[in-house]
Image (cartoon, helix red, strand yellow):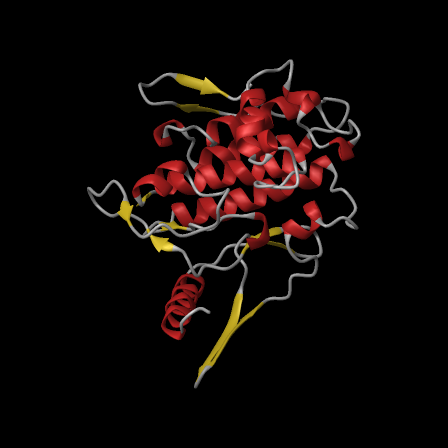
Length: 270
């Protein structure tokens, strides 16, 4: 059972952040109740529920490629908004169940109970108790409790993998070597001969192979074991924008941007 003081702390965190931040890809907080033992948050109605249900519920129709990339882009814009705020905010619990969809499949981030104000000034990280969801948390955060915006980027990489593969981040119903989506998929992400093996078969090939290569390469960099090698969320947004425009014919309408890896070496997702 969660103790009431913890509930109050999480509710206060949620109200503080959502009360100050406004963005099309952040769920809108309508109001809240805090009376006696009653705690209630009221959000805008999100007609299509969570991304988790659309990806993993057995009765759900498979999401088309363009919809998946649009959802990834919307969620990335939400994270970029948090990271680029006047006082950066680290979301800390980015996962499919916290991404809600409106009637147009616009992605909006919800549940800010674990969010944390980011480092200020000369600080490189925030030290905090490790919290979040197994399978999504960045390895350096799990090991040290050091939290940065790049921790969210890793979690985004996991969700992007889920969108690409149609698999859960942790799935004990699969063989032991496939329990962890990251461990199973990462060796294939940077290998053009094998990466199409991991794309959700329910898509039935209705996607641009070139776009799939770029999306897989983006996931690969987001999941880097070295936090400094992960792109900023603003770079992720720029990389994803053209991918939702690429249909099954492989037509390309724009080139994704480069971002700089440590040491000044340019690196393009290709």
